Amino acid sequence: MTAQSKYRKTLLACYLGFITQAITANFAPLLFLTFKDSYSIPLEKVALIPMAFFMTQLLIDFAATKFVDRIGYRTCVVCSQVLSAVGLALLAVLPEVLPDPFTGILIAVVLYAMGAGLIEVLISPIVEACPFDNKDGVMSLLHSFYCWGMVGVILGSTVFFAVFGVENWRILAILWAVLPFVNTFNFLKCPIERLTEDGEGMKMSQLFRMPLFWLMALLMVCSGASEISMAQWASAFTESAMGVSKTIGDLAGPCLFAVLMGISRVFYGKMSEKLDLTKTMLGCGALCIVCYLLASLSSSPVLGLMGCALCGISVGIMWPGTLSISAQKCPKGGTVMFALLALAGDLGGSIGPSLVGSVSSMADGNLKTGLLVATLFPVLLIAGLVVLKKCVKAAR
Image (tube, rainbow, N blue to C red):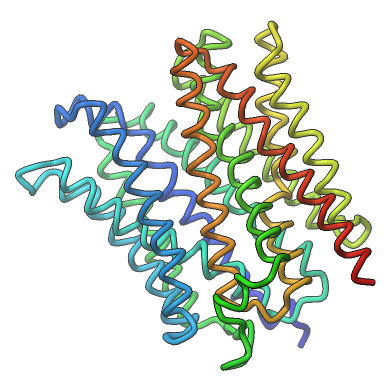
């Protein structure tokens, strides 16, 4: 039996795990205005919902370095699916039964954010531990399923709301919860290997003493910021640049961005054995700079939208590529390394969009100015990759 066939159920569970993470990250933002109107929640309080999600995920990323190896991959990844399912289901229930609907929403969001954080930490090392030959390609293909999940939740929710009305969003929340519930049983049954044997994985203090680790952490921060800055502001950018409705903005902005990002990850997954990962990431970083400049400096709405969409292709390989390079250069990094790199990526995913929003506000709401400043992240990514290549040459 080949590794591919033996671990097919493991891959399926991990694919569905990333789709689950995409649902938890992208479903509630589609309902922000609905929460405001249905429960009379001020927009400034609604803005705390994504902050609660990302802060919870960051805390789980860090905490996982302390307990995952002790408890075991299987128990933790099963918990990730249970927490995601329970959180999504309670999102439909708690705002209706608690005296303060906003508190009910936050409780549900924190629960499924805990699940999303565990998914972020665990899925990549679970697949890395499987004895596949082409791990760069497998990792890239794995991460494409977050993109397909993002596309699915945006398209699926848009169609559901168009057919059944947005007032029935609670039914859809329950339906989305079915996926992690079913996937719980996949993780209970599939083969799961350890990334390192007991006692062989590096401790946090050992990683912190490695200059290479800090370089990888920088690449993850820049990867997360380059990807999420454009992804989170794509809808608003499309609406303002093209003068279209929110529905069209969601489909032409973040949805198209996610499709192209997914395609780029699938493409590298199929072609990785013929491509040099570092050189590919350098090329993608350069394309990312061009895309940000096109979106922020072009006077043509069509060219601006093209820059926004093509950015999905440019950032696609950054996150999984950095994880693959880290696993190659530091094979004893273990779960702690993957958890810290997930923390760095999520930190970049929090810093980037916040920077875009803050700069845009200071520029009288000019989103293009915020995106122009965000060009800093792919520039730093390229600089980090150049330093990495020099370090590798010097070590030979």
